[in-house]
Amino acid sequence: MSSVDLLIRNARVVRPGDRRTDAPPPTDIAVSAGTITAIEPGLPVAGAGRVFDAGGLLAFPGVVDAHQHWGIYRGLGEDAHSESRACAQGGVTTSLSYLRTGRYYLNRGGSYRDFLPIALAELEGRSYVDHALHLAPMTREHIAEIPMLIEEFGVTSFKIFMFYGGHGLHGRSEDQADFLMIGPEDRYDLAHFEFVMRALTEARARFGPGVSLSLHCETAEIMAAYTALVEREGALTGLRAYSASRPPHSEGLAITMASYLAHETGLANINLLHLSSEKAVAAALTMAAAFPNVDFRREVTIGHLLADVDTAHGLGGKVNPPLRERSDVEALWRHLLAGEIDWVVSDHACCREEQKFGTNPDDVFAARSGFGGAEYLLPGLVGEGSRRGLPLSRIAELTASNPARRYGLRTKGDLAVGYDADIALVDPEGSWTVRAADSESAQEYTPFEGFAMNARVTDVFLRGAQICRDGAVVGEPRGVHLRRCP
Image (tube, rainbow, N blue to C red; front, side):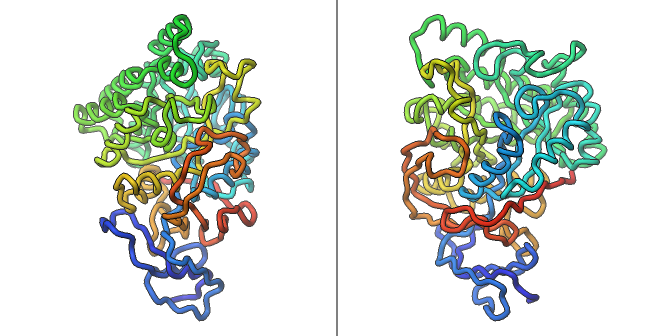
């Protein structure tokens, strides 16, 4: 074995695909130049630059959180710094963040050739974790830029927000042309979505099968009508009112339309994001059976797995799609345990209090959508998943290997020789209570306030460098932007 920079001893290595039902036995992990070079018990200590005793803790692959929103409500560079620290706390070592032109993010329109270098400059040197971007083609110009974005910037994953163009981001209609910052020659509608899909089908033929499209599936017309209905009747308040204003069948209908368009355009790789309800998952499974030529992947968030309209802490739990009834939470767990969900994410979108709540803090429709949660992704899934019988190896698949493979992160997502030494050590019996004040996020509240967690992330390594020690973020930002090859 060549010289070793880091030797982690007595770690119980959790790998995707390992179907054991008990915790794996302790072993050692050797790291050189940021890469895992050996995993076996009894590796020699002599010559190791640093020896770290894991004390029998579980060692998970660093989480590949495939759905975040850095910069949506604050400066992109500000978010990269503070929210990547929250990532490190939770065992997230790779963040994939959605970005688009228009209001929020950089608050500018125009081409991605001009937009993207500005975004990358904002990110450079600020993040504690590695990061990559998904981009949303908002205009015909963006569609034409797809080959350039793949070839020159290594962006291979794209997104459609299906309700944009017809319904407000936060639950009331607004001037969508102004919000999206698109010109009079562009429309953000089903026809635009079709042309995005056709362009990505062509890109896959040219560049390879790693190009994929993600969709936020909600139907604007249904939501606009139900928002007006809920506000007019006035019987519901809080998170339950918001859920009723964006009903589950709105998700199911959008999934159905998007899936048919994928079939029609021959686009093979479709990712259905943050499914929140039984109806949404049922629609996704129905479409997968109807169109076997499309490789569908299904995503849920830790928020939709842990919280519901009654248990979330206040209106800080407003998010799109909404938190649902407890029956939907249980349905998501049934589908996850049945192997019908492909990955779990945080959908982390830091929204500070002064931005989150309107002049009437009790008006859910005046509040902004989204909240952080990367800190709770791995401990929440390990704690609640283990209680429900979810194997540890499946947690490694759901949080690391599955999103890494889908999104072209070839050295991420596993603990094996040749992979990046991205390692999250977890105490599976480390009980604690969620307090927003303990988070490194700039967000001052959390909808998980007071939730009991039954697993704790203790130490985290990014390419062999420790970025979290005993729950505290350490060192300087060393995360890099990841160019991907399709």
